[in-house]
Length: 574
Image (cartoon, rainbow, N blue to C red):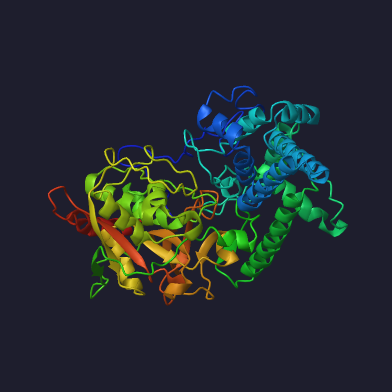
């Protein structure tokens, strides 16, 4: 059976856009940051006085640290501590008039100035802004606060109109979905761009970036000649997926670290796919936006964390029917216009929020006939009192309970509360614009794949947790993912996804699973995970679905149940 492509939503095609940022295009990179010129003039720091000008003039230490963290150049606490220590040294020197301390104070001031110069140089290089080192030195000396405000404005180091004394997240660009140029393109029919097409696209990309790209195919001096082919593949990869470090020099430590991660994954892909050709595996691996992540970086994306306290809002446990004969053999909720296009969580452990929202979007569409795109950011910011769920993770049921308990069962639409791939720590829910009437949710019998199949067929998309810790999941490309080393115990689960259907592919049962890593990953953002294999990867261990009611309190289940007849009819023609 060839998997069908998603259908058109009921009333409108809901597309995912990056919040508070421009669409990528001419003059804008994949994070929505201006490329080719400064976003604001040097002396325009008062255009956005709060917080940009205010912070740059009165708290330059904080601003410099925030900019550094935004670019992934330093740790916030370390850099802030160093600057505070230097300022304290200056105060002591001024009070004591000790010549040695005064010399140290001058050195400290030079250190700070050099830091600002380096930041300006890095930003110019990263975003292809014309200028030179002389200009960087001049503005850092003559008007340091102005250039700090200019840099902070350009890379959005502050939240608009908020004076904040903590750092925003580092750009999520390293796993942001970008349109593939053709090195390894995931597709439903395993289509891979031809070598000539690939070469043509890479050539065009190289030509377009020739005036700004610092990364070249010249082998860095720290590498050996045996690594030449791998380096060339890495450079192609950086251009292919428009990685920010394509503007860096070959010898940059960050680039070399990315190369090492890429090399490891590149070798894993080759070894695995050779074994696939020998019939040892049922799925292939391929290059995708995550192929330059080290194992440690990859683990940061896996943000499912089981709740320490039992759920309080679940009203029932869904159990399997006595017989599965009335259920369809295959099912795909995308064909019923209740599933939105694949989204991307960025470099934030918010998979649990995307999983919960996918189930809520389906339940709402089944109940109202309208497919809406809901706000994952509302769950990230508001759940558990606004803790840093990007780093700490969360659980789907916690997202349901947040909406039910604190927002009257209503959730904001994506357009009203857009995703930023970071935990703001402040809940900005717009309950007056929110929609839905979610009153509870149900658990599916833990570990029972028959119950999960029935829940998908009769209730809708299921929010499920899985063990995605293996590099084989990170680099998945196509086929039925079967990995016996996966755990299925509750403490083995680390990633939240959405089960949108099930079926059979090349005589292998599979679950159709929607991920949240963009459509450049896997099969256009989906993965076929093995089904009826002893709950492999724990897909049936923690499955839930939200319950939507009418305003007067009547549970809307009839529409789900009557779909079974449709399912049976559709299955005969799939």
